[in-house]
Image 1: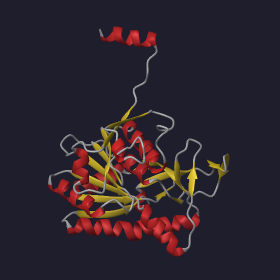
Image 2: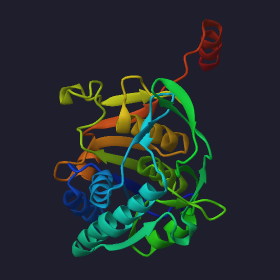
Image 3: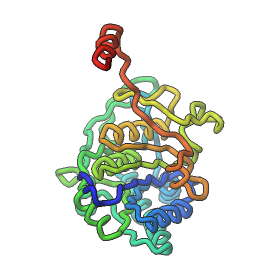
Image 4: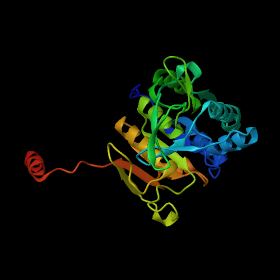
Amino acid sequence: MKQNSGRPPVTVVKCGGNGDVDATAVCEDVAELVRQGRRVVVVHGGSADIEDLAQQLGVPQRKQVAPDGVSARHTDERTLDVVTLALAGRVKPRLVRSLVEQGVRAVGLTGIDAGLLVARRKKAQRAVVDGRVVLVRDNHSGVVDTVDGEFLGTLLDTGAVPVISPPAITPDGEIVNIDADRAAAAVAAALDAESLVLLTGAPGVQQDPGDEHSVLPICHVPPAGRPPRWARGGMALKLVAAREALLGGVRRVLVADGRCRGPVRRALSGTGTQVALEQPVLDQPARQESLARVS
């Protein structure tokens, strides 16, 4: 859905599920942006709550590592139930309540509601197990294919702030888990958002995950293939999401610290890391031809 020229631009904020992220500060900042006339969508995960609930219910959790090194939650049937309960029953009500207390008309949604996020499930996924690439068939997860941007636009036009989380639904009605960062990227692209802010429990994209002083002001990602090899785990997925948003037309993607006061406005003012697409390297004849056209 392309935004009409008379409408304020959209900012999509991904509130990370890391327990260190200050969700109250995020909601206070979103409320301030709304008071300033901005249109805001919040997308959230909830890894800390998922793991806590899984432990309470005795549901084992494990990661699935793809051949390119990117890892994500393995979602079997029991874990899918845990994800749904934790996000829709714990995290979302907290965020919506906090926003409402700040005077925001927050509307809580999963990707299932109104068929908001339609995803495709891979029936078999490649994963690395004990150094060997195997096919995994019991992973109930998918990738967002379509977003009902018109529905979200209608909510935004009323002054509401949609608060969105996994799971999503497939065209044949199956419920699947989705990565919240990539869901935020899909939402931002569907709304032709001006900015996507990915808040996390780190000051930005760190070239050395153990050194907060190694934050990159700009992180370039290739337009295809795996993210930079030093990116691991959740940060690798964030860079994949950032790339998808940029390829989808989002003007600016920022990875920033969600542990501080005013995290969204700080990110928009330049604190953290801006993600950009790598420019293709031209071979010498192509470069000369390109320069000739410019001159």
